[in-house]
Image 1 (cartoon, one colour):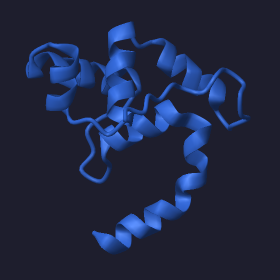
Image 2 (cartoon, rainbow, N blue to C red):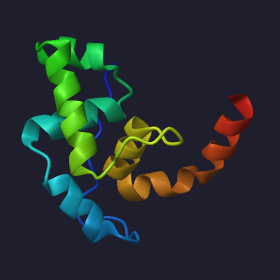
Image 3 (cartoon, helix red, strand yellow):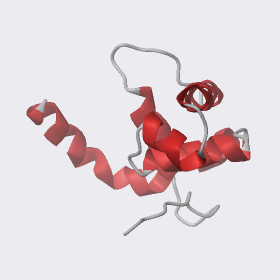
Image 4 (cartoon, rainbow, N blue to C red):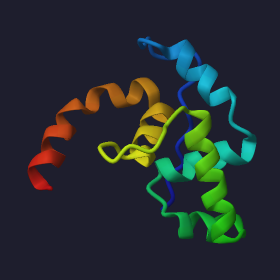
Length: 107
């Protein structure tokens, strides 16, 4: 069974900074949005490449552009992939604060 995620509709849920989030996501090309969607589904770069029928290096380039357009610079204390997905999910992710504590305890 395949689950497909879509970004929330504009104004579907009130959220702080939702306009800024939408502006960031609107910068992405259709292919970059497709890659980000697959990232949000938990796919690895290799799995994304296989699904899109492109080379791994191409996916890595798209992921890098997603990070750049979302303003996610390299930081050894943050996981850009997770932050990109949280930006994609927007208000849906606001109820996941409790998961941060769980991840910290398990890691």
